[in-house]
Image (cartoon, rainbow, N blue to C red):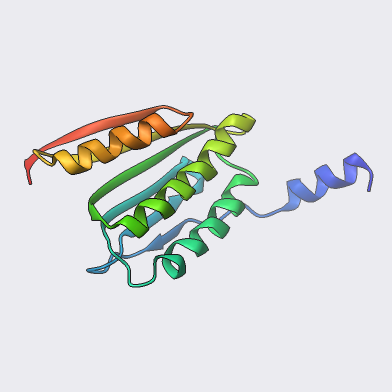
Length: 144
């Protein structure tokens, strides 16, 4: 297929629609606002089946990665997550890391934690040490 034909097809692709999934008592809310370059997780992440919850998010990010915003903010404000969620979170962050490394978008992770929540603060520090893009640790002033 000639290059101009490929570019024309990309130009005609409709923009990705925003996505929102409400939180439950076991799963976080998920927000993707493609035009604003925002991906957000908030709440508690202790799903009965982490694979069933997190795997569809990879498809969502694959679609976003086809035409991401110039800058992407990954905003995480979890009150708690279990060990299986931590693996899936890292997988999601690696997805963003690939986009960042390819130069398709500049990714920043905002890791929010409540004042005094040393476990969540340490988790953010751990992710920061593992990822190849900027990670900001942002302490909420409310005590846990």
